[in-house]
Length: 242
Image (tube, rainbow, N blue to C red):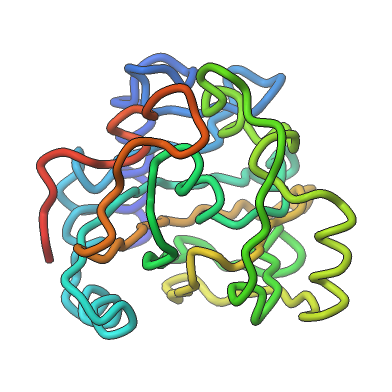
């Protein structure tokens, strides 16, 4: 199965278009490294195997139970942290961005992460602050146009809390690594503070992220952005209720 997934991941990279996040391309590259892939978006809509994996009833039923509603996939992506060169993802709450830039009205969404490789503290496993989803932290500094083109490369300026806020939350809730073996599944609230450090280990880390949003929580116009993000970053059309 692992060899099949490797082929599917490579296929997604090949089909993603130019190596830059644009209105057309689904591929995000590392900042300062235009040939190193960081993320590929909308993989459940373009790949049969990844669609089957993302819509497995065992996963979908958990999402329905947690959100107490019908659900659809608001976003899907593969995140990469290649051995030696993978950059981290700065501290953030997904909901803050989805509210500001996508018009998601309430934190009624959750992420499901399927580990394609072992995830541990050595290779940059996700760090989370358990319980932080109970508090909302707004982030200053949105750009007037297309903030998403740079924010997806994670320059740490937009969509991230201040260092003081992060410190206060860490003291209150603590920080743990949410790792696991290949094939494990991690589920977390959209308002949870999380991030990951760079991967300088010799072990790559690749994960499939899928975001389930409640049917009653469909996105509208952005609350704090000049315009909508592309459909392959935040799905609004042809929604498949699961």
